[in-house]
Length: 257
Image 1 (cartoon, rainbow, N blue to C red):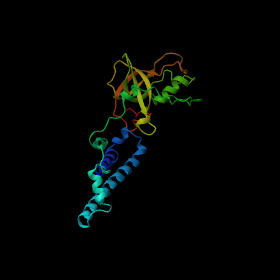
Image 2 (cartoon, helix red, strand yellow):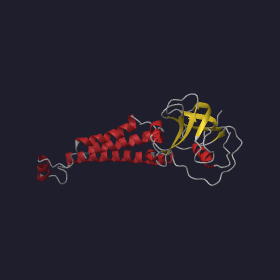
Image 3 (cartoon, one colour):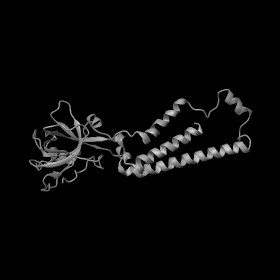
Image 4 (cartoon, rainbow, N blue to C red):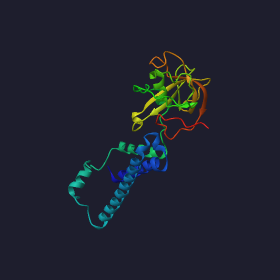
């Protein structure tokens, strides 16, 4: 690969990583917050490598002007060049490597949302042997995983008739009349994303990808405390909220105020 292209790729990639991880929060659309320091470090390393590569190239030019032909140059090198054997040349398609680097600077793909969640099976919820008593707070803040576990595994029926509060993004479902409250969970990056969902029954369906806080009661069906019970909620209130900073975790909703 020719040095001008190497320098350009290194510098643009470094600037792109720094833009996404140091100067903005764009990286949190694709990775966990704990990965951010590594991205910042990678951006600095790529930027420094690009600067060093450019400096070496300029130094080589100066040496070539004042010190005669470069080491190794000779009749064979010129002959190879004329016969099409210049191995420093690269296919034109290599310039397409610039596109990912430029996208980090000028076009950031959106965060994972309803499109991804609608095409994923629900995350498998681990079996739980025992449950602590629920606090008397009303509405009771729960994660979507906690709600799912209580509905399908808690034989004490503690969730029955309780008003609960959860938050997540809106994922439409075929047929209308209901929608899914969703949390997309990543272990490392967007490539390993999984989702947990609670079916919501409400008077209206918010737009897809809207972040909302929902309060309501368990939607009766099947036998509560068993796998036959639907993981669903009859909504009393649905309020639009800002996407939280922990959007890729199944976290408790912020207290309503």
